[in-house]
Length: 555
Image 1 (cartoon, rainbow, N blue to C red):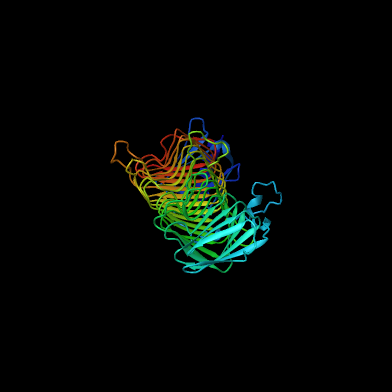
Image 2: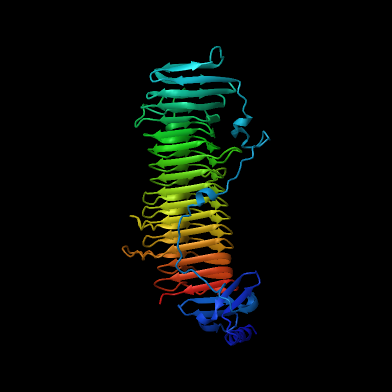
């Protein structure tokens, strides 16, 4: 019935000098085909699949059972258009078009995050610490029980057992430091301090309690460590004290304020916590990091206060942000990361895993611009799941064997935008460069993904599990040649996976080798354009029950 109807429609098209055939799906999608550019129309034996062979060698197909109606028009306004050789580019407007999630401060004292908000902290005493080149002065401390300090030139060590304390730190020294021992949480206000310690951390907080680190409004603050550290202090329990970076804390670090904090690390990490780090606001510039920019043993969170979101710039020799045993969440702010290794790394490797440790990455908002240079370096490396529901990422990974997203488990796109370029080729250990490397499954329900791989043997999506696309827009480009300099040839493909299922959205895939190489291709909806410059666009025939499939094989 459908075969007869379509044949009659084509005859009517020519008789009426109409050119455009509209095939309307039940899901309100349609394909408009210019019949004057159609060389041939064919059907499968069951008359369930219709293929239009176009003049340039492309084939457009749709499943008849998904068709609601067919209509004609003489207008070329909505004629069939397709992109078999897409372009990928950073959009300069992205830096101002991203969404942000404004934090909600919990009122329940039993809430896990209640203690992260300085608004809930009551200050009963402020102690001002003022550095000069060769000395340090402490004001407002007279008569404080449970509080003491010692100084050595411009180096000060504070011991406190008091609650509700705040320390205002200011002044300048090129040979000074601040170390704090505290049994209670406290507020540390950077109020125009410029501090360099040539032999260790500029600020070393030997307390496992929360530290509210406020970058005071209208101030610029600078911290720098030394290229080599003195031997660590031996604690009362006989173990060496940690001194892992320019700004180090045993406990949680919670940043806020609207001033500027510049951190330079010549010997360790720039900012490091043996617990977790939350950045709520403020301008933080990691000018240089000999190791990681931010290093946290637990989670890392970027949110925004009601008044402002943070801006973070990181230049790191090693990783930009490294969570060794926790979750990374970015909800807001502008982050620009340049790193020699992973820009964002969320890892967890333990012979006996702790079920409470969830090494996932959540991108919910904000703008993140990434550039990595090292071999096998990734924009985002995550031990477990990668989930993007908002925000905008622009990433360029330049090293051989590098990835834009390197995920050991599942990758999910619910919204937001990811634009990425992988410019490297195969690494020294035969690892291919690529876009998204996923050892689990990839699921796309919404959002915009555009990836271009320009190195030989690269793949935009390399998925060990299955790929399911239910919505969004995905553009994949991998047109450089195959890598044949090793025994195991590396094919340049847009997608390599097990089964790929497309139920909605738009997928455009162009590659030197197969655009899509899979054990099974199932199309129930959506729009798929696939192109290969040297072979077949698909390495296996698609099972199509709906949607639109347009392919072009090499001539």
